Amino acid sequence: MASVFITASGTDVGKTFVAAGLIRYLRSQGEAIDAVKPIVSGFDPARAGESDSGVLLRALGLPFTDEEIHDISPWRFAAPLSPDMAARHAGTEIDFDQLVSFCETAMKEADGSLLVEGVGGVMVPIDQDNTVLDWIAELDLPVVLVAGTYLGSISHTLTAAEVLDQEDCDLRTIVVSESEGSHVPLFETVATISRFLPAIEVIALPRLEAGADHPAFAQIAKSCGLV
Ligand SMILES: Nc1ncnc2c1ncn2[C@@H]1O[C@H](COP(=O)(O)OP(=O)(O)OP(=O)(O)O)[C@@H](O)[C@H]1O
Ligand SMILES: [Mg+2]
Image (cartoon, rainbow, N blue to C red; front, top):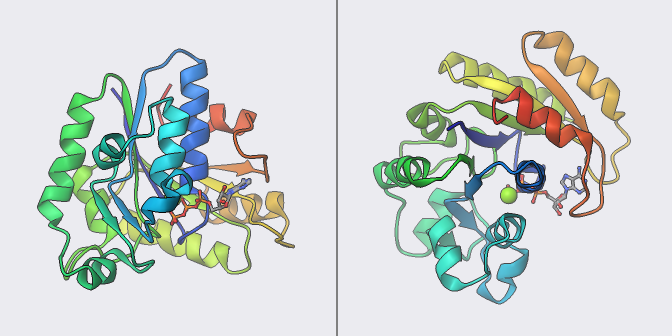
């Protein structure tokens, strides 16, 4: 089955929001879907329900237990830092090969499709030598790149698309998820990114209520090959 890697132009842009929307859409269509968010930094067990793992488990309709959280997010760190730093502050490091094999096993074991949510943006360090880009290249999955409409997002997005292309990663879809309080127009941002990347489907996702449905989720699922 198809699996997809969800990355972003930066942190807090909308990866989990898009992943949860895709999960809800695919489940409403009767499609089998699973998700992992292998690395979480800034994880507070007292507020686990609000964490990425909590949001994804809720969308998947799975029970919210320590075991389920561990299964989808085995690398959890308290410090809200890049994964390499957060791991170092916890006196450990992320084993990149284990991270890759965790995802490969999750892909094999998933009943249907699997969404892999990355961490932060494309060039976030995972360990001493590897970034999210290396992780994407190792898994060789179609990529959904989530961008925002914050000022500066267009440059971050085109830069991310450029490095993904340099590593021959299969960028399928860019989702522009409207940033909170942004004065940058959503549809002009979509048009500008499309002008520079005419071969990539660029999809607008306006501000929505948490858990709301929107036709963009069906469009995203189709464009990255999930349906
Ligand atoms: N289109 C949108 N409409 C409404 N809220 C949104 C939208 N996109 C993102 N958000 C909200 O913005 C915040 C950040 O989004 P999200 O957690 O999905 O980012 P992320 O890229 O997964 O961040 P991280 O790097 O921490 O994993 C969340 O509160 C999310 O609900
Ligand atoms: Mg997230």
